Image (cartoon, rainbow, N blue to C red; front, side, top):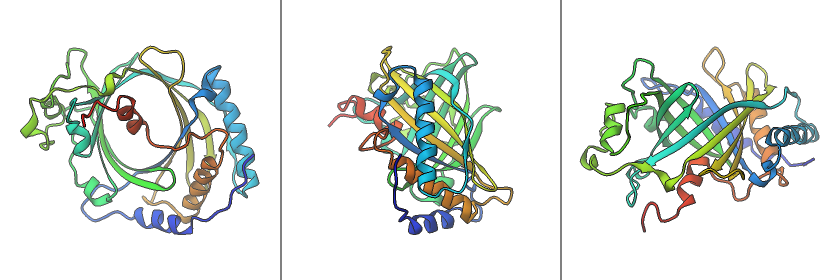
Amino acid sequence: MTKIRWHHAGTVALLCASSVAHAGTPSVGSREYKVLLNPASFASQPADAANRFLTDLQASLAANGFDRTVTGSFAADNDRTVLYYDSPGTCAVKQAGYSMRERDDSSGRNIELKFGSPNQTTSANTDVSGSSSKAKSKLEDDITPPSNQTYSHSTNEPLSDSKNINHLSDIKDLFPTTHVFDSVSTQTLVPVSGLSIHEVTYDGAVSDLGQENADFTMTVWYANGSTTPALAEISFEVDVNSDGIFTDKVTSRSQLMFSVIQGMTNWVQSPSSTKTAWVYKYLPTFCGQ
């Protein structure tokens, strides 16, 4: 059980202010708080380990005066293959502030293009429209330790089984309004760091924060066919309310929960980063010198 002190009033104020939409741009629809955990903790019976984490979290939240509860338990949800794409030697996708991720599961392939910026307006105004009638876009506030904010504007759409991803021009084919790669369209696109990731996610845990819930996901990654976990992440997502805002109470409870998780040093990976950053660091030479 971890006892922490609450010193994030300034961060809460910042998050409250950031929920206000700028006129003429898409508004933030959700916040997702993400913390990397020690993957060794999930080497045996990862679902059981996820629920042990949940028990420790409940105790730590109670010790820190959390005035709500966390209910439910983790059970396996998604089981899929994940690839990130970029150009070897130059990492043109990353350098432009984007990431490109493919997920493949029993329902088929899906491709996502995401642009991220610490500036909400910049991200909202970056067009990532897809080419499919089934494309879905969102603007999300991603928050990572200690309190870093990235506004992520992304579009997901189905990817046909016959579509090969070989060059940067394929991004334009799939997301026609994206012109940033036009001058380097012939550069090769390959899986970043040569990684094929087996991703298993667990969900079912939830916390009532007031007007909105925090929905938890535990993600475990296995790299290139290994049965030993290479990465683990706990995240929780909070949607805006019916008025399109995050109330002060929802924000403060979210931030308290995020801080409590970071204080669970027997679980947390230190230093923490993001899943995407981990992919690029897996083979440090992938982007060249």
